[in-house]
Image 1 (cartoon, rainbow, N blue to C red):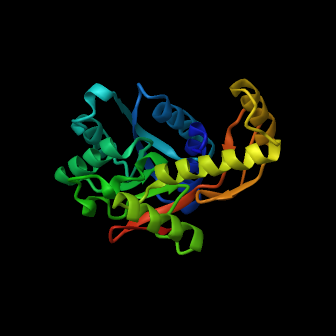
Image 2 (cartoon, rainbow, N blue to C red):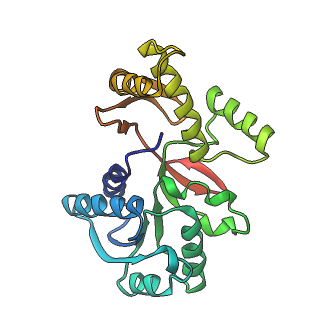
Length: 239
């Protein structure tokens, strides 16, 4: 039950502008991935309306996701004080390591794909200190629903759940709510169930781990509010 990818770009630009997190922005995104490139395009458009200056925008592909020296060098030389990373946590971990190695310490801002970086095997989590991101889920939240999920997840898998796990969990219960609202029965065909879901979701409001008052539009795109987080001492803290 993920965000509509491009919307994260708009929300990130809004957040950076409102919180005045940076004046000169560099972006590193993956141009052979619709998730990353879609977020970047929306971010670029919204950044312009918010008066944010993008001084460097560089790309990589899946095949070139090991060496970011060129991209980081361009960002550093352009004087970027904020690095926006609309990418997943695996390449982000390498960028943080390589930026540290070259003595480049901009503010780093990511999106929901970066959630999971703290549990990446072999990654020095101190490199993520101060990283900010928008994500729909915080495993350190103290509400009963979140803590129950986190504790049961730890018992079963021996690890702390990230937003991908929470989104998947919410998907199951959102479908359950939609099936119940539509009056679906076991004798329905797969096609009939799909039609019922298309009808049910636009009128459904759902409270889950990744948001309260979650809704869907007629295309099936979910609407929920992201949470601004900063990594401090190896945990997520709300901004």
